[in-house]
Length: 214
Image (cartoon, rainbow, N blue to C red; front, side):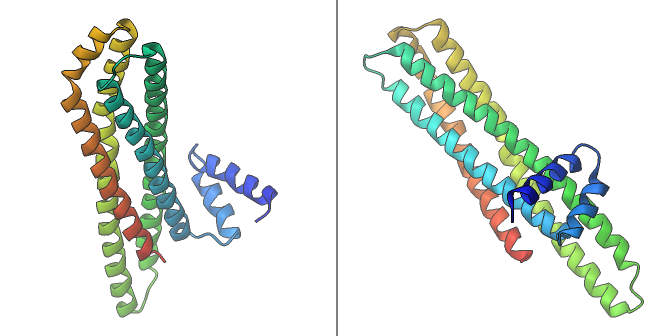
């Protein structure tokens, strides 16, 4: 696909989520993309964004563990690195939230269209089979969406805890501050471990759902 076409499609992706969904879908259909294809793309992007966020939170966890084992050195440099980890995690969390919203929008539109088109069947066998497939797909999608949203929601307490650690370190750049922060070590590392586990579940759910759309 040429750069011009990719840029054109990217512009319509933006339009789709700023109140111009009908124009977006109409244009994408001209390029051979039905809503089913668009849902697959949206789920893939949401999954990939989760993977990127997972990497950033894993890096933050590694940084926290290094901090708790701090034994001399440039503490201000350590703070700067941890602050950068927090900023990247915050940005990734926002991107994950956006991808989930986009995915949910496409799914709602697809299922509404599917439901409407079932009414066009005069053959009861076709109608029954299509209705069953819609129900199955909607059920699998709801499981996926719930899993992604659960992981996304778990990011918020982790970000709050990370932010408190970063702020405290900013205000107290000394070894005593590290000792005080160690008291929260189990809590925050436990939070991040739980988040990473939930992300693994949601990523697996996304992979399974994508296969059903192939």
